Image (cartoon, rainbow, N blue to C red; front, top):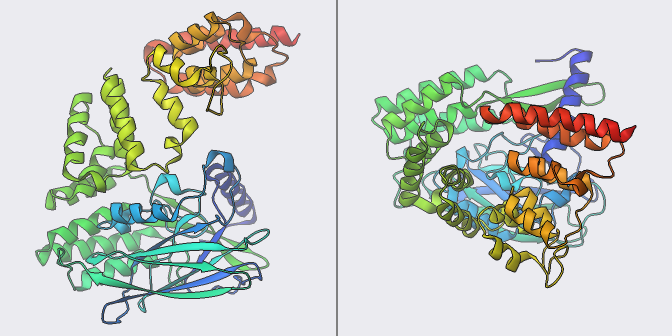
Length: 502
């Protein structure tokens, strides 16, 4: 659907805001080689052909890749962690080998898809599924200087096959590169060959915004998928029917605008809320006809968890026991939160460590974020041993931030008090208050605001603009019995900073 000039301007601003928010890397993936896509001297066009052991093309296969160094560090590289290793792709392919088509929030294009939330901006991406000839392709576009050596690893995945990999190096002056990935049949899976399988694959590819056959109305795709799932049911193939039903909520709608220079361009994607009633209903339908699918059970538990916290814990623990290596990051993070809410610090701590072992390259498992989360569960003595350099509570032996950062960010009032009692020099007010508000702990906020050194030196209300915003968010999402206290605290903070400014 084409937009007016006003709508185009709004769409552009909205898209640019979204790009900043997700720090996406610059990748262009194409299916029909649009005229506007030109391979420059510093770019590299990659062509991947996927075939079976007999050399026949494998259509609609998912293809993922890791490139290092990353194509572009992103707008906020310090928040994204280091480049992903090539070994990361091995873990991800093993994790999602049975459900590769579910592993992206959006299809590639202006907003690249990532099978993990941890891949964003870190040179991990998915390509458009292979076409009927088993081919997909992309251009790695380097905005500034191209690295002297680029290491790349690609994996192809398709239901009924064992994942296939290929690795290669790109050297200076190499602007095109072609590879073939051979997929072997997975003898443990009976892969159906029926019209509904091809319909499912075709729609997954066609609903990619870079497909030459894309339609920006999701309803025809949605309805065709539902009919294909019903055909699988009639054929008695309930496993595949459930697979198709489960993918229906993933159908995206593309946002296009008309560019005076390059014609109609893709600006971005949107997708219906997975928690909409009709999407929940269709997920329940999938679970009903295939109650054994770990993916469908996991999706259902994360989208619509049981009301009782103990029931949530029991259900997810049972799911992990069935297939830990098939879990998605959200399962571990949810369980840690559920245990924490139940006051079971020991099991929350164990879940934190389990997830770090499961996926060490997630930024939340890197030093700063991991230490903040770990601090929630350490005793004061354990924290001191881990973070406080001998004789100087202002310094840390091995970590990027001083001890007070982790204590306040984790909402640990007891550790904060220990640090103050032992002569720590409280950092600038904006530093402490920012971490206190991000901790989402009313007790931590009250303690910091009640500490005189923590609020001296305020020069203007502007200094506290981000913190006041965080308090607004906290109040909006906080527990009912804390709202009144936090509202009063916010107003006191506004008044205090205003007085200081005068």
